[in-house]
Amino acid sequence: MNKKALALLLAVLTLLLCGCSKLAPPPAPSDTPATPAPTVEEPTTTAAIQVFSTIGGGAADGDAGEPTAAEPVDTEDGSEPEAEPAPAPEDLSASIADSPIRDLEMVRVLNYMPDLAVDLRYATENNYTHKVVYTFDEPYLRFGTVKKLMQAQAQFRTMGYELVLWDAFRPNEAQFVLFDAFPNGNYVANPYGGGHSSHTSGGTVDVTLMKDGELCEMPSDMDEYSALGDRNYGDVSAEAASNARLLEQIMTANGFTGYFGEWWHYTDNTGYNYADVENAVLPEHGTRVYESECNEYINIRRVANASAEAIGKVPDGERMTVLSYMSDFCLIEYNDVIGYVNAHFIKPVYD
Image 1 (cartoon, helix red, strand yellow):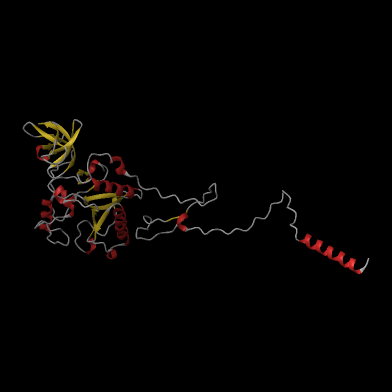
Image 2 (tube, helix red, strand yellow):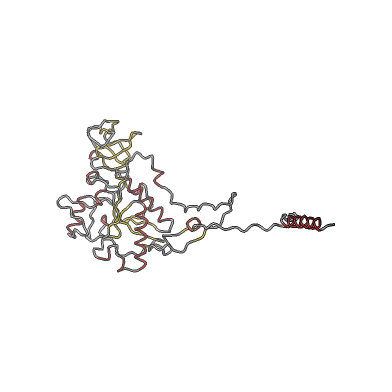
């Protein structure tokens, strides 16, 4: 073999050897697990897997508390499951959504919150005037305000607390008694010259908290007309401050606004007109049963107006159920007819 032929043969062999070195290795046997390719985990947001508590357990002071990681849950497609929201308190107002009563009308609170703890201070001598101020002994509020209070009560109960109601609707004549006993407009609304307390609108409450049958420690008692009664809690115990802040947090979340000078005082964010209810005719003691007191009969009106269309009649001495109160009218139910009657021609029945 000459030199040219030998060189050509060596070149062919070299090309063949280089091509073989670039071929893929044979696949691994089926019983040998292949090494998976490395993966890079996507960062997971803490909001998707953690739940923060802002109330209870010492977190009422506004601290977020320790985050609690949710249990990992596998999904069919391998994606990160969505965080399940914490259960909300039952929407109690839904059960009375079909009521014929409008939110602006005033109702007896215990008709809708029969187990609410009530200590109506101005219906007793246990108040700063040291005398009974009210002519009635049960609380009344706008229907819309009652529904918000029900929601707040439900939320407090999930944490083991109970609301205690100190005051609700306040007749304007009672405001004169309160102001005369303590004539300081910074703490007691001055009714002279047409002024009103927000309580007279029927949309304001004075409340505190109870737990395990005992009143919670708070910055002060009701009607503490000093710096101890305001919402600057630097001058009270840590427990009292925590309880007062918890009260404010839940009441605010349910549609109320607190007055800075009184930690116990909350007004419904829905504004109501004083004239609607300030002269409402209320029973001395709580009852829903009334009877007509007239010469022959009283008209049931479609709306609370003396000239409105009459949709029925209640003969003298007949009984009816009162559903709500306005200034000169009551919403009543009589023989399946619901409408308004003049409150001055009916009287409560106490059996």
